Length: 405
Ligand code: HEM
Image 1 (cartoon, helix red, strand yellow):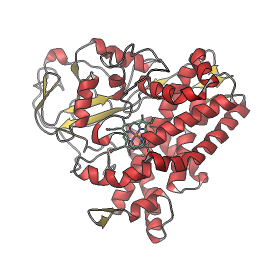
Image 2 (cartoon, rainbow, N blue to C red; image 1 turned 120 degrees about the vertical axis):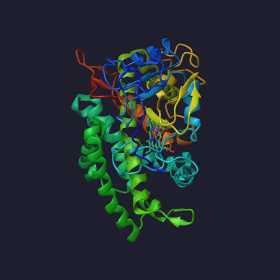
Image 3 (cartoon, protein in one colour; image 1 turned 135 degrees about the vertical axis):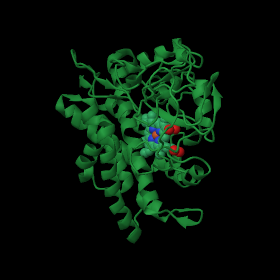
């Protein structure tokens, strides 16, 4: 069931903190602000603190009095893998729109995930390869022609939007409109809900159109798919498409931004990839690990013990892929980027039933983007004096990345 929760509980002597939270485990850590220019390093400092703490500030404006934050990869994994105890069925959009399959729990989740899996299989992604390559080529050429660029605005944002439009069978002249929606969704919780409703209304029209005359795009696939032997409703198709829009854009934009900042600030790493493209896939796994971008949320469906503390039914739990990927218990020298690190069982795409559906596409986009940059653009670096502003929250992001070469 999809719920918009309100929480009723008694509070302890600390305002806003539920009774059962031990005062020594309260820590007003805010995943959204004051993380500095290198937010991953700031977050990784939490590993020197308690195994789990309670923050009164939720990273994503989810209702409730705050959130538990397990810091170890082991505990984060346990939460994400136990969907019966830690539910994902909570609205992230502050609206009636249900994002499918993210805001569902098994067994319902599994039915929708099963129809979506084939669209994102590695084999299917191969068929997108040429489009991804051409799109990267065009955008890199345009950046190079400018002589210098803002990597975020000129490349990291438009690249995944173009791929999304392709998948949805939408013409590229929709680019401006979808870029604006993406900006509003990424800006803050106040602009997010309205923009998501607008995307939903726009896609809803397409759903009606594709029901009448299906093509070979993703919406047509969704309107002809069946769950429990029945076709999907319009709201279900729209919920799936809106999720693909929001899940596949800012995550890719942000990952690109942090990956390229690393390459721009570390000429030896950039040089090694420039001279041997076969190193890029392994390097990209390390960049995903070191610069994971997602903090997600679950809530407890029953009282349960986690990391030695009592989590009460209804409590929020923040699952930070950023924390998990920098856990010193799982990765040697977690704060050092080692592009040849292998094996690299990182957490950037999460675990369990909701593990990222688009990970193969994301990998393809990032690898191709790096290859095209290193092919077309000479050694690049961050423009001297540029201030790099980053944002925290549900998806870590970067405001701009001025590059010169
Ligand atoms: C580097 C880029 C990406 C990262 C770091 C990333 C990360 C994640 C993470 C951590 C989750 C789990 C969320 C949770 O459990 O609450 C997730 C789920 C998801 N991702 Fe991605 N993602 C990326 C790219 C994409 C792309 C390109 C698409 C599709 C176009 C996509 C589609 C999805 C979907 C549909 C889900 C929900 C899956 C489910 O509920 O079963 N992602 N992603």
